[in-house]
Length: 183
Image 1 (cartoon, rainbow, N blue to C red):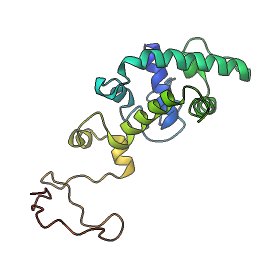
Image 2: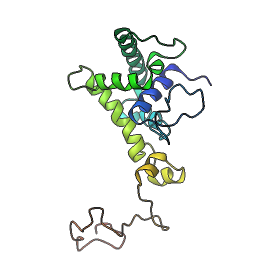
Image 3: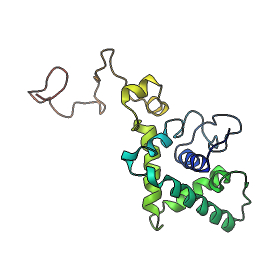
């Protein structure tokens, strides 16, 4: 399966943030460091490519820069990389995480860029921010299912019979309607 360098590089970054199972035996982007679906299966690339997120236009340059950092890291650590895939993808998983740790360190000059990329990977998994919640449930979104996000009742309305903190934190506003909306 032919995958553009940008795609496989960004998928490898997303998989480093929230690892998952390989999609096929020779999958190079996903290292297979965890069981179940990770950020890639949850739609990290789809979220990053949405213009509204603000990173879509930067993905190409992020991939190039990430691979340059991987080249530098490999040189500094004495790693030999497989030239048939982008440099970040060629890094073993533990070295991918080490490099991401360096790039997101508070003292790194590009920290804001890499932390932003990591946050989008988390958002794709934790909230399916690139699709509506009903669509996410209809398609079996792995992140929402993994974190135990409550599904709506049969009528499509979200109701929570038990308080998440084990107790009621506030009284309902007196003008709240039966559907939970303020009047």
